[in-house]
Amino acid sequence: MNGDDFREWSKRAAEWGADYRASLRDLPVRAQTEPGEIAAQLPVSPPETAEAMEAIFADFETIIMPGMTHWQHPRFFAYFPANAAPVSVIAEYLVSAMAAQCMLWQTSPAATELETRILDWLRQALGLPQGFSGVIQDSASSATLAAVLTMRERSLGWQGNEAGLSGQPALRIYCSGEVHTSIDRAIWVAGIGQANLVKIGVTGKHRAMDIAALEAAIENDISAGMKPAGIIACVGGTGVGGTDDVAAVCAVARKHDLYVHVDAAWAGSAMICPEYRELWAGIENANSVVFNPHKWLGAQFDCAAHFIREPEDLVRTLAIRPAYLQTHGKDGIINYSEWSVPLGRRFRALKLWFLIRAHGLEGLRMMIRNHVAWARKLAARLRAEPDFEITSEPMLSLFSFRYLGKGVRDVEALNQQLVKAINDDGRIYVTQTILDGVYVIRFQIGQFEVNEADIDLAFEVICEIARNL
Ligand SMILES: *Cc1c(COP(=O)(O)O)cnc(C)c1O
Image 1 (cartoon, rainbow, N blue to C red):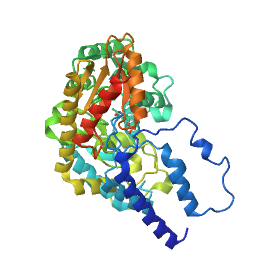
Image 2: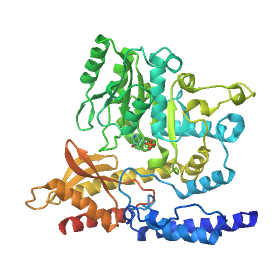
Image 3: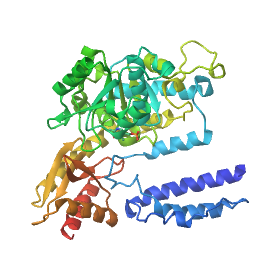
């Protein structure tokens, strides 16, 4: 592709993007394809000779687009959102044009220095105290893996990387049963083993770890000759928003010198609003916390903000300094690749900088407050219907419900049918979860451009489809 073509096709891509965003409300949210339908339209072998961009672009529109689920659709109420505010898309376009690799300060000084400053903006925005340093990871899963590796090394006197785990006492890590599967996987990858991830039961309306049970588990493990290494607290669990008492967890941790990592991947964005911070009261005592600005805040995927109180511990765990990676510069420069498992890293701070400046914290707070208010309103409307049941109260903008029907015996089958019918209809998109053994429908409001009329439409769609089953 020559320079003129690059210019021309970049403009066409931008036009396409603007048209796409403008048309979203008319598209079904979830892709309406059967498995294999897209693959069947793709040649099995690569072309030997160059093809024209016109043909490539046409195939993108006719083959690929019908197989996309539209995450930027205003009526995407499934999972958690992966918002890409238009301004963050523009920043990503610039980043992709430069395609810089930002592993060391010297490989992109501006990327490093902007990252340091913007993560400190975010720290202030969340109300985290000074003393937390931030780094952008590719995902919350990577941040949690880095935290678990730090727990491992810290508890083994920094010998695990060198000596391996054989011959060591079993390392024990504690969390509730509400945590995301990324916690389990971090434990596997760190070599600690699923059997040593101790899942503590939950209590209360927030589905928080039972603190007495946590203490008892730690003490039992110590008496059994095992080695407690850390606790992972959850603020806004994936299922129904389960939230631990961070202050109480940190108090237990302090008694036993354990590392505390807080997974607030989704709910963390809401902490830009001071009135929600009671949900993670005590956060200043945690060793690290992760949240995903790519979920609720609007920074295009991927972007996970990882705050660490003692970055030296993380660097001690992850830094490898072969000669060819050493930079000779002024003292105190940061090489963020030493803060994460992957070496290479994209320039992710630019989209946050654009986003925060273009919307201001007040604009982002207003969005989040609206979503929370609308979730409460929708839950109240469904509760008022005789044939619906609210199965978990709104935690921020997430709640769950189920349809009871009239005289229906198999309520689970009814709700499975309802989820399928809603998603086949396409006007809204929802997913399910299992809550205390019961199949329930999850509903979260978090899309960047959703408005109150979309929520009213969601209510109508749910009632209409349920009653026509
Ligand atoms: C989404 C989510 C994760 C995983 O985030 P990734 O960035 O996809 O790794 C982890 N924990 C919670 C609570 C989440 O909501």
